[in-house]
Image (cartoon, rainbow, N blue to C red; front, side, top):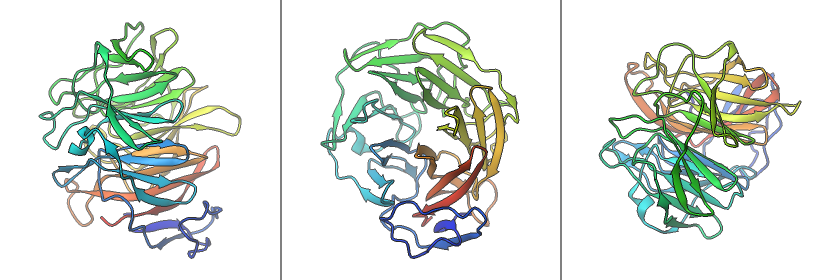
Amino acid sequence: MMDGLWKLAGLATSTPKQSHAPSMNVDGLWATIDGDSAAPSPRSGHASVVANSIMYVLGGYDQGQCFGDIYAYDLMRREWSKVDWGGAANFAVGCASHATCVSADETSIYVYGGSGPRWGAANRDKLLQFTLATQQWSVVSTAGTPPPPGYGQSMVAIGSKLYLFGGTSGHDYYNDLYVFDATTFMWSRAAVTGPKPSARYKHEAVVVGHDMYVVGGGLYGPPKGPIDVFKFDTLTAQWAKIACVGDVPPARLAHSVVLHIDSLGQPALLLFGGRDFTEKRTSGLWSLHLPTSTWTKMSEAPDALVFHTAVMWQQRMIVFGGSRDAPGQSPDETERSNALVEYGVVDDNHWVLVASEGDDA
């Protein structure tokens, strides 16, 4: 279990929080130091995105309550703060499992959907925009064919368009792709070709150039067998299923996936955690080398997590929050975390835990 703030021993424990990331001693042991009292409360089902070297954490769920708050984590200074936002009150109601992304120019955060604590009974159907310069929420006035209310979708930004895929109403599951054009404010249901993913929620979507990769997900539980990976080419509106080789991880949902560019400039997807078809939480970290479609098992993390988030910033994979096994309890018991865990890349196939902070669960 992760408790407090972890980093590799041999690094100065007196380093102030506002300092830059410490250098890594990959031969060290683990040590623990105090957490950050300004961190968000424990939660799962939240969203995390990065804009202008700030990681924003939005919403989430714990103990029967959905949050409508926003926290900012300065990735350079390693410092948390709560965002005092204004504008539309829709987000203040609180939600979880909302689709969230940053605009391509990093000026706004977009949120669509999500649900209240009675899953499926309070699904959201508005596109919200959080303008970073003013820290104001607004409800985007849209036209066209919008997505249905729901939660567990994915959403990414490519150019001036948002791509929203999948999700659930709590009863029905979807595999439709909707596109929002931020220049015309029009939603459309995409006319696509090729083998598209099956209906699913709590999958992950990652942008690589003009392509969107969709990794994993499922219905209430993921299917048996290896995880699937699909690519959507936004220039041709064509889906393709990726034939993966190597140490392919089992299917899962409520995991995290981020994009890593290796030392040769080649893209890889890093997958962490999630829940498999046995409903077991997993702690493995895998890498999918996209040029060869090859999966590699990389390492285990100190904790198995689901419904957490991960972002990538300057060779650091930052994991926040999520649900984990409750210490000393049966595997069916769970608790939510507010640990911040960082992995820093050492070489193209070796990641080590640098630090975590804020864990008071």
